[in-house]
Length: 265
Image (cartoon, rainbow, N blue to C red):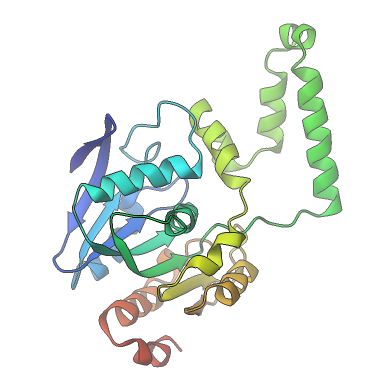
């Protein structure tokens, strides 16, 4: 399905019936990656999942966006469905969108429940070596960006970024590279105590992108949170241990809150 929001043609799916669950994907992903999870949730709920701008079949934004821009877009997208209440399932980058959305004073819908799967949002602490490396990179970038050197070596800064950058950065278009820089450098930990709805955290204990320590910190900060650890899984725990994750989701959404811990042990 396609729906136009702010002149951007959004690719999305709308499956099932019942209370709405919104799914927000991770960076570099798209809704097809979550087909199994969507199928499980759509048995008893109406699931709406979109390719956010710059991912999947949705065109990239007209200029580099920050997290707030994605929040604005998702809110307008969901407002078009005229839902008064929704639950949200997020993975990785989708968590950043959720935390900033949840912190807003006014939304056109209430958030009833949230599932955070290997979610981003906590800024990693840099080691001394990483700080020195970052400082050297910034100095090098400043030097190589001077007019004379930029004329002589126009690709120097980009070469430095490629050597130092992540796969996400190197695989992105210029617009999405600038977007990535904007979104990853924001620490959302101060917003986590504002999550008042029931929250389920699902995490791979071998996740190196958003380590398990992030999940434990979120569990401390979010008042009504529970954590399910997928042993042996990495950053895509929902795919690596699908049966366990699907069982956790069904328990969280379809049975009483009191019975969830028994199902998830």
